[in-house]
Image 1: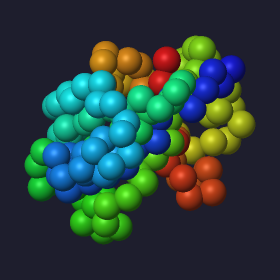
Image 2 (image 1 turned 30 degrees about the horizontal axis):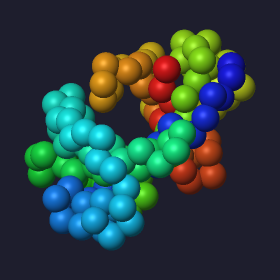
Image 3 (image 1 turned 30 degrees about the vertical axis):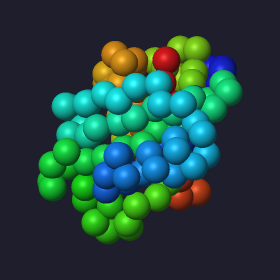
Length: 132
């Protein structure tokens, strides 16, 4: 298991277009792309920052996990994503160490990447996404 880098920090927002007023227009970050992730019922926008990115996440339904999260906690930081060299191996090693996984097998996320989430109960309260 090798952590390559922090890939992105995801921020839940009620409206990506409005959020871009700060992240793109005020800070000057470039918007690389906006993509709908139907499986997660969300719209995402990526703003690269060096070797990492800010990911803005807007729910596309009122019943999605992102919508439920935002209704409970409000807009703000949702998760941190770490790039790993081998997601299957990483998940196996974490599970062997007693880490509570949300996804025991990777799913497909934005850009067709393999992703999996680690439960905040095992990370000190932070939702962690892994991607390969």
